[in-house]
Image 1: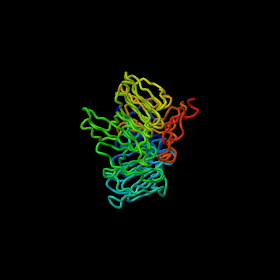
Image 2: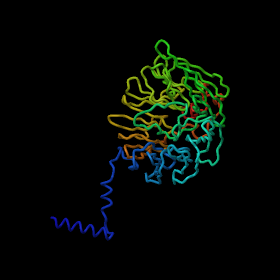
Image 3: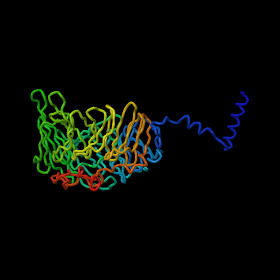
Image 4: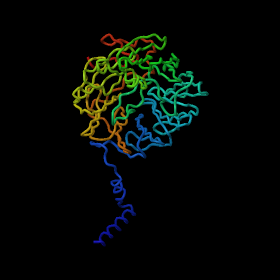
Length: 476
């Protein structure tokens, strides 16, 4: 028997050496092949060098940020296209013009790379902060602690669209997207907070500098206001308005007053009381958090204990939950709500007072809304589901314990540990939902002080960027 085995081994070696037949690569591929991370299987699956910090779909590539490196992979095959050393990375631009900003911690400057080749498109050696959006990239350069210049660039532009003076910028340790005063997203386990990719730049941005807030118009670069919050106030810039959130302790509870101001003249345009935006902790009503919400909408809790969604521009109540219902995801178009009996998830169209679809779900289900899909997670069994947010039509259903890392127009990246894979949305579907109309246009839409765009069918304003306007000809 030993002789026959030895003879067989020698025969295989001779055939491999002669190029006639070589079984070793196939055997090694089987030994080294990772266990599929989902069922049905993904289009491709790759093992990367470490657990990713972030994953972003950028056109036809996938940008993977790790602790000390950034790499790009083909969206079609998963093959690595390039990699390089970097402490941070961020993607700017839309599907047709993405770029990758990379840099080092505690060092000034950044480079803009082509996602497909890794070639340097533009380099800056002096910037101390970078903010990336779908239709704009901002950077800040400071010649002194109180002398900074904010610049706005088209994602692939070679000269700034505008510049603005700021008396400092609060960037902390230099990296991408230092915190600004806006909204705080609802989060879900197993769905990455950046899965939706870069958003369009808001019409206004609030830069905190030395206890004051500088409001910048992103269409023109004008610094509209320089405001200091009151003793019991927290400021936020949402939906083209500057919000003052006041919280005071009365009768053992925090009492909230919310006022919105036109940043061009400082006038108050709307006011609401009794809505808790979850900015304060239980000790002394100190406000340490941004209000919850997304883009131009705010999420709060009324005095009756029911959650509500408000339009940041005009203060309208766009959605009020029934007793016991819980908001789990929201954007400018829809809200996903867990039913009071915790057995289903309902999708509601904001401002329309109607339920678009309902889906059975467990009490621990999570969800997120992206421009292309609503992503749901479930446990026992573990699943990831992508749905058309408008109709509830299934785009893909996966049996997996992996996380949803990035969502694009035609599919999403999922990952578990060092394994990442791409799953394509169902070919039999009519196509994933399109992003809001404002995502591809110029930043800001109508400037601050606008009436809010054309009225909708009910006579109400659609918001400063028309995010809430119904799509004509689709719903009747």
